[in-house]
Amino acid sequence: MADTVEKEQPAKSGVTPQSLVTEEHVKAALKADKGSDAHLSSWSVVEFTRPGDNYACVVSSVKVNFSLHDHNSEVVYIVKLNPCRSFKEFEELTSSIFAKEAKFYLNLVPELNSVLRETGEKPLRFPICFHGGLEPGKEIIFLEDLRARGFQMFDRRRGLDVPHATLILEELARLHAASRLLEDKTPGQDLTKTYDFLADDVMLCKDGAEDVITPVLAQHVNQGIAMLEKVGGYERGIAWLQNLILKLSDILKQQLGPSKYNVVCHGDCWNNNVLFRYDEEGEPVEVILLDLQINRFASPATDLNYMLYTSLTGEVRRPNLDAFLNIYHAAFTAVMEAAGKETIFTRDQLKHEFRDKNTMGAIFALMIIPVILLEQENVPDMNREDGNVEELMNELKTKALETLETNPLMRPRFLSLFDEMMETGLIP
Image (tube, rainbow, N blue to C red):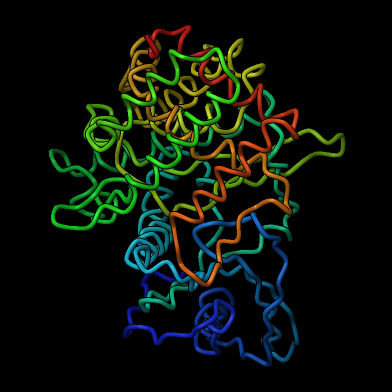
């Protein structure tokens, strides 16, 4: 596996995502995968994703023919590509998230797996990363094609059931616990000092930098207000959201800021960013975590809130919430105990931390749920030439309001969020 990431010069304008794949990139990935004796014969880009499958990047594949020790072979890599969109205000953000993901895979995951191996634990379930190129405007990441191992996407419009959710929670716990073990190797120094990309939270505005995320999140909150107004009877929820907008930036800093339970977090764990492998009876038996573009060093409760409130229906989440948190706690504790360490929180402390971060869960859900349930043909065009973010958000708002009436999954999925938040007292 490669242990470095290329850095080159700024990209020229007019580049398309697929044109970012070059022979140099393909050779670098092939060498990292098959060794220096592998010789590239030919390669081609093969599309396989649909509109709406990806948002922050373009995902494609590269089919590679090569020879090794006089034998001809073929391998397919998944490539994540800079989308080369017209939204100028997001160019710096796009470069940041590619850097975070490439460095996470290439620099941090090997160290996390090393501490797990020392305790007899299996490696974390991430795809193998073979190569990352971070030329601004031309970012590209080569990953293992997990389809070859039988992994597949879960229908994002369906809420996760208990078996699927359990696999994700257990793997998140292993990631979080492994990061605590790695941090223990350098007492008194948190992981952001060694892995600076963890400290760069794309959801939080850097000092002196233009805040491009908070206005977009505010648009999603406004969209939630419009949806509640259309439904009617949720005045408490509307008032809460209106107040949320007024102090959204401060809330993000509080919810995502330092915690005594800080761990390495996935940051974007919802059912579009995981793959499952199934047994002969169709039951999920293994999960792979994907898309680490907004990884962060924060409370584990931010990951738990993100996953549980974006990817489950209220029918599954509400009656099983305590059980889900117990599953997570048991998996976290098992990793710590295997290393001879005490766990960092009791079950009650974890539940309190989870509730303390519920506002972040609500914000994530407002952002994700309407997008999840849009039909394929209604997904807004992320590649619009005008590069107008406000127009894009208005289009999403219009389609989300229409979906309240046309998609029977939308109303209960959306309203269950507010029913729970009123029940727990988050919404007064």
